[in-house]
Length: 178
Length: 355
Image (cartoon, rainbow over all chains, first blue to last red; front, side):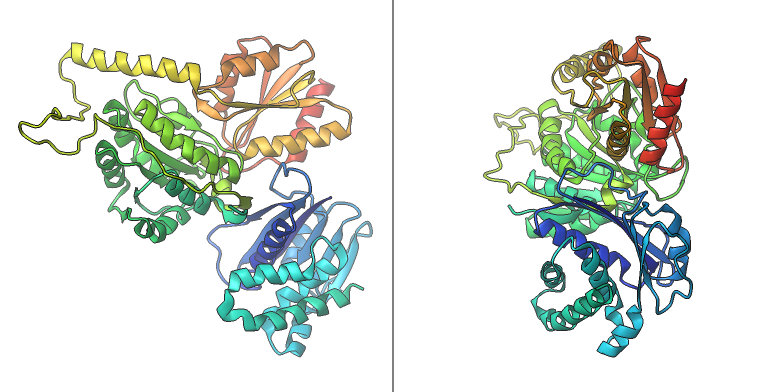
């Protein structure tokens, strides 16, 4: 098993966190993982992306140049990275704010209205977790509960009260791709 | 210890502390700021000292001082900052003081950019500062390897009384991978009778003088001879190299650091097309594992070698010296932080095959 993922969006959408949680959860499930951020003079509203690889084998290149899955949280990300996705790969589109469709026919496209579902849950900040849920629902590469364990480690016990909301967000996202 | 997902810079800093480093002097520069940030938090917790100096020059001279007093000390910076430290590194080498210097290479020349690069190979391997000296140079390719290397770096610095450089690219610093840190148990630091730890008149210990100024020709000759005798021992004992898939290979890739991992991905892609390609990855850049490079290239099966680096042609010179004409060595390099993809490397090998 090897999953090469590219998570992309605006800075502030939680794109890097999504990738980190996946890498952390993958590690907790005994997989090899790498997380590589794009870094530069970026700020809120700028572009952000990260490459996350999960594998049962040793990971050679940590850079994802031909992703098996692309998560596009905004339109520029879809426009920029659609062409590099591996044939047969998956593209997850945040359809709440991306108003175009995937053009390619040799990939699977999933449209997830992240911001709308987040609004229904009463907290716009969990739109990234909805998307991560959708990704997990399709790829099944780690358990949702492991993601929550990873999140708890990141948040600390003091913020453990946020776990149920995030669980709901992940599950709602997973439902979108069923 | 259980595995932990850590950013390269933080893992390096923690590994240094586990290796007994208690002093850090530095000046901020991207993309290595997570090292001083982490050190500023952790060193006071273990009874050490973190100090943000007023400049790179000041920081490296503080390293001279702490190392001269026998402490395990390190500094870190990124390319332009490392350039500023070169005078100090030459002086430290001449004064035979152990220390560890981490360079998270970014794009150059000049202020360049803040993306990963390998443009400081010549600077680290061929001197950097003035005069005849060497520093041991380690080039890690993963965060776990970097962590394991930190212990070795401090040990070898003490053993040979020399500066040790960790030459990593910005990617190693910024990415996250699971690492296992070995908790230091009863850390026994070596005796350092040469250290300048204070002089008591009438005491048994003679006055320690650490110096790099030898006005008399004979005295300077003696120092340089002593250094080069030591370098000969280092060259004999300390070379490290990884040979991957080289046996019976048709083509040999030569690369270090993160680029070597991208080469492994290229080898995978080529393997799927039935082309056997191997990799020689120098882990120590000085001393350079010339024999291993030569041996891999000398195989009858090997047609050509390709050196891949994120610079305009630096490592390739040492590969060609090691090859000594036994096989053609091609070069694929991009300066200014343009990291070649595995697909591009594989394509280049296919081109070479087509002739």
